[in-house]
Length: 312
Image (cartoon, rainbow, N blue to C red; front, side, top):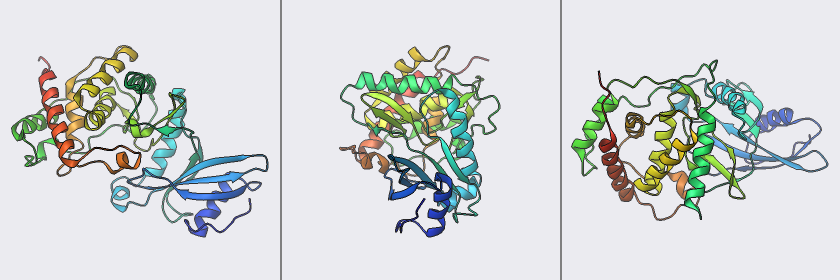
């Protein structure tokens, strides 16, 4: 490959990409990708003389995240290999710099999946069915040898009373539930960050699932709850419930337990809730921080209404 001057990236990273893509190919373009909030993503186009192909480079540049999980690049590489076993379209691993020895920071190079993020669908039911079917397919893979396992991001019992909410006592009850005994369920393969902004569509069909860096083994309800939480913020409780109905239709043997939804809800709290920047990047309009807080309150109340403590 002939290396051209690429202003977005230092020459050592361009050279590393050059080697991984192949010596007989010409690098044409490097551009930052929108939507990344915890790492830097770049789309890279190259030519083999007969056509143009694209790949994606992720650079793990967030020091705080690396301090907590120093094996992030290794984790994503292993996740991509495991995700390929689900039969879904996922990026293929092209290169790994696990420690940043070559690139200066840990890096993963992968193929680009064609498709677009859809957050405001023309046909909501068709969209929800596609999301649910894809998630159920992920969970049908047991990933028995995958070494990364689910853990909570927050310690629910240490969370502070939410002054931003109109229902602080209900949140305190949710914290108590999330911090209590967990239902016993069989583990499966989890995406761990499954939501509409990580699902690509082409011709009204799911064309691929991206952003596998957090994949792990754990309860299916963790993924279901995270997606429902995102839908509740984007569109309201009713759509979150419609997604649950669709998932139950597609996921053989799944038994709904509101505990996992409550855990997913408490797991995202880090100060007053606000609009996720990625949603606006992908064209979602009409959201405000106040609306997000109102929708989270409404979603919380709906979950507490569904919660049934396990009998002892």
